Amino acid sequence: MAEAQSLAERQAAGRQARERTKRSDHKVIGNVERDPIELLEANSRGRVESLVPLRYGRMAVSPFTFFRGSAILQAHDLAGTPNTGITFPICGDAHLMNFGGFATPERQQVFDLNDFDEVATGPWEWDVKRLAGSLAVAGRHMRVDEATIGDIVRTAVTEYRDRMNEYAERSALELWYELVTFDRMMERAATAEGRRLIQRAKEKGQTRTHESVLRKMAVKQDDQWIMQDAPPAMFHPGGPNSLLGKDSAWAQTQNWKGKLGKTFEAYLATLASERRSLLRQFELHDVTFKVVGVGSVGTVCLVMLMVDSHDKPLFLQAKEARQSVVAQYFGVEDTPHQGERVVSGQRLLQAASDLFLGWTTGPAGRHFYFRQLRDMKYSADIERLDNTLLQGYARACGWALARAHAKASGKAVEIAAYLGSGESFADALVEYAQACAIQNEKDYEVFMAACRSGRLEARSDEDMAADFRV
Image 1 (cartoon, rainbow, N blue to C red):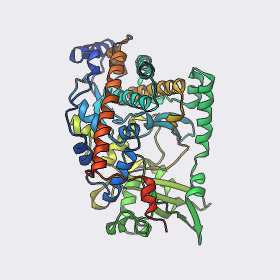
Image 2: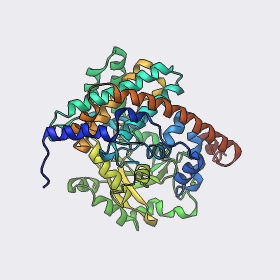
Image 3: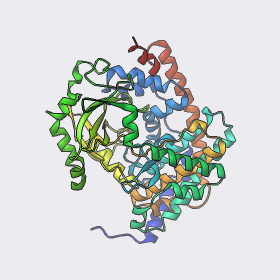
Image 4: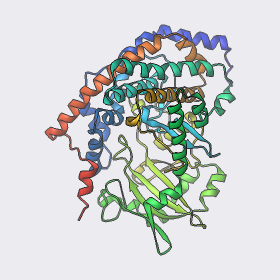
């Protein structure tokens, strides 16, 4: 075992990182002399071809949705900027919409990062910049004035700094057990309206169970639960509403019960033995393809409806994992299996991960990871928040991100020593976020011009749904 450094040595290492990269250097936006369309097209290769126009259609809604779907652009730009040299598995897409509520296996409701498709080893500050940039983009989308946007970004960054300073004093086990619960968030809320909003989110999350999904998504036919098609968002891979083409037969329900059983068994082998035993109490009833999010559109995502002997459901999601944009531009590949990368990163960064989180290799060598489709999960409706509530949400995100980094890295002492207690880093991040939001709007304009000219095809959900109407 490596010899542990003293606290004084670790603090010195954090301060030493300031010589590599001054805190004020983080205002630099990076290399933006690139064609955003070329990068987006490269990021779309290998996706389900018929769904790429829907990906672009969802991104075209606003500069805010465009930013959500274009993590590759920010990763490309940050690759040319100074970094602290303090690296570990980071989220890679710590956008403000990739935080939310969910239930731990012990049924506590927590607030945490909830998307790990881009997780990879990288500089911790890339995550903070992704969060800061997304807050500025959201603020401009909601027509918030520049000074207030700066205050909101500063709130998130100073919360991250203050929590990291707090976590630097915690033991390794204390950090591992740390949870940002909804109850703690209510105690911390600055306003009565903020407390009411958190309480409503908590109550709404409690209604989002597998049984509530079953009533909305499936019908029973001859003792078999069948999910209902709702193209383009959800459809049976081999059915009349499929958008996958003739090569999609592997994803049909009977194949998962038969020749794909080995794929599922390989997934089960990545779970703890008691969780394998639990899953074996369920029988597969149906499999559908689900189109999720913005940036993930076009990747393979299957929903498996499983039912136990009491006719109670479990929805598992099998989602394709592709190379992380962080790995692509920072150059560190932690594992050759992309599903394992996602699962390992999620288990490391989250305070408590999904009971059924695991990975496998599917047909044609595609890498997948599994998790529950919905388990008391909740995402904030950002566009309905006023400035005060958005600032409170930014504070919660800064807290959750600091907790994730402190746990995953074991370097809270070093990061806290680098940040210090002053405003240098926050000042730089406010400047960075404002510049990032302006650059995002420029990229969005180029993107929309490409859609109008026909270089890219963009179709909305409504347009594609109309194709299936009689």
